[in-house]
Length: 108
Image 1 (cartoon, rainbow, N blue to C red):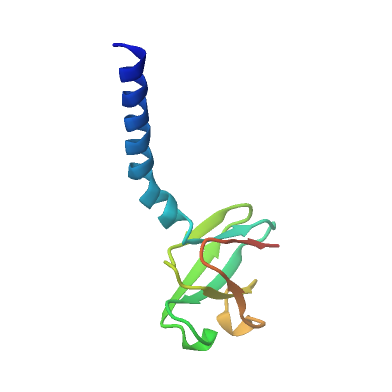
Image 2: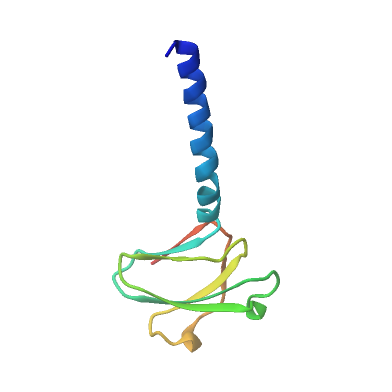
Protein backbone atom coordinates (compact mmCIF):
# COMPACT_ATOMS: atom_id res chain seq x y z
CA UNK A 1 0.00 0.00 0.00
CA UNK A 2 1.52 3.33 -1.02
CA UNK A 3 1.47 6.48 1.13
CA UNK A 4 -1.31 8.19 -0.81
CA UNK A 5 -3.65 5.22 -0.42
CA UNK A 6 -2.72 4.87 3.25
CA UNK A 7 -3.43 8.55 3.95
CA UNK A 8 -6.77 8.37 2.15
CA UNK A 9 -7.76 5.24 4.06
CA UNK A 10 -6.65 6.75 7.37
CA UNK A 11 -8.62 9.96 6.72
CA UNK A 12 -11.71 7.93 5.79
CA UNK A 13 -11.48 5.81 8.94
CA UNK A 14 -10.99 8.89 11.10
CA UNK A 15 -14.10 10.47 9.57
CA UNK A 16 -16.12 7.29 10.14
CA UNK A 17 -15.03 7.20 13.80
CA UNK A 18 -15.96 10.85 14.26
CA UNK A 19 -19.41 10.39 12.75
CA UNK A 20 -20.02 7.25 14.80
CA UNK A 21 -19.17 8.90 18.13
CA UNK A 22 -20.74 12.33 17.55
CA UNK A 23 -24.31 11.40 18.62
CA UNK A 24 -23.03 9.85 21.86
CA UNK A 25 -20.95 12.94 22.65
CA UNK A 26 -23.86 15.27 21.94
CA UNK A 27 -26.28 13.25 24.06
CA UNK A 28 -23.91 13.18 27.00
CA UNK A 29 -23.66 16.96 26.99
CA UNK A 30 -27.42 17.29 27.43
CA UNK A 31 -27.58 15.48 30.77
CA UNK A 32 -27.14 17.22 34.11
CA UNK A 33 -24.76 15.60 36.57
CA UNK A 34 -25.16 16.08 40.31
CA UNK A 35 -21.92 15.62 42.27
CA UNK A 36 -22.12 15.21 46.03
CA UNK A 37 -18.87 16.66 47.36
CA UNK A 38 -19.98 16.46 50.99
CA UNK A 39 -19.85 13.78 53.65
CA UNK A 40 -23.64 13.38 54.03
CA UNK A 41 -26.15 11.76 51.71
CA UNK A 42 -27.93 14.43 49.68
CA UNK A 43 -31.55 14.27 48.56
CA UNK A 44 -32.37 16.17 45.39
CA UNK A 45 -35.73 16.86 43.79
CA UNK A 46 -35.25 17.60 40.11
CA UNK A 47 -37.93 19.01 37.80
CA UNK A 48 -37.48 19.27 34.04
CA UNK A 49 -39.11 18.75 30.66
CA UNK A 50 -40.35 22.20 29.61
CA UNK A 51 -39.57 25.89 29.58
CA UNK A 52 -41.11 28.24 32.08
CA UNK A 53 -41.47 28.17 35.85
CA UNK A 54 -39.84 25.45 37.92
CA UNK A 55 -43.14 24.57 39.59
CA UNK A 56 -44.69 23.88 36.17
CA UNK A 57 -42.11 21.34 34.97
CA UNK A 58 -43.89 18.10 33.98
CA UNK A 59 -41.11 15.62 34.83
CA UNK A 60 -40.00 15.07 38.45
CA UNK A 61 -37.33 12.81 39.82
CA UNK A 62 -36.05 12.22 43.35
CA UNK A 63 -32.33 11.51 43.57
CA UNK A 64 -30.52 10.05 46.56
CA UNK A 65 -26.80 10.74 46.19
CA UNK A 66 -24.36 9.11 48.62
CA UNK A 67 -21.33 11.06 49.88
CA UNK A 68 -18.57 11.64 47.31
CA UNK A 69 -20.64 10.13 44.49
CA UNK A 70 -22.55 11.52 41.53
CA UNK A 71 -25.73 10.84 39.57
CA UNK A 72 -26.65 11.84 36.05
CA UNK A 73 -30.14 13.02 35.18
CA UNK A 74 -31.18 12.38 31.57
CA UNK A 75 -32.96 15.67 31.08
CA UNK A 76 -32.53 16.04 27.33
CA UNK A 77 -32.23 19.64 26.22
CA UNK A 78 -34.43 20.92 29.05
CA UNK A 79 -33.10 23.07 31.85
CA UNK A 80 -33.33 21.39 35.24
CA UNK A 81 -34.77 22.99 38.33
CA UNK A 82 -33.59 21.35 41.53
CA UNK A 83 -33.55 21.70 45.28
CA UNK A 84 -31.79 19.74 48.02
CA UNK A 85 -32.80 18.47 51.41
CA UNK A 86 -30.57 16.87 54.04
CA UNK A 87 -33.55 15.15 55.66
CA UNK A 88 -34.93 13.54 52.52
CA UNK A 89 -38.16 15.53 52.82
CA UNK A 90 -38.85 17.70 49.81
CA UNK A 91 -40.86 20.00 52.06
CA UNK A 92 -37.48 20.99 53.55
CA UNK A 93 -36.25 22.38 50.21
CA UNK A 94 -35.23 26.00 50.52
CA UNK A 95 -36.04 27.08 46.96
CA UNK A 96 -35.34 26.14 43.39
CA UNK A 97 -31.93 26.35 41.76
CA UNK A 98 -31.48 26.02 37.98
CA UNK A 99 -29.00 24.11 35.84
CA UNK A 100 -28.61 24.28 32.08
CA UNK A 101 -28.55 21.10 30.04
CA UNK A 102 -25.07 19.61 29.89
CA UNK A 103 -23.82 21.14 33.13
CA UNK A 104 -22.56 19.64 36.36
CA UNK A 105 -23.99 20.69 39.72
CA UNK A 106 -21.65 20.43 42.70
CA UNK A 107 -23.45 19.82 45.97
CA UNK A 108 -21.67 20.64 49.23
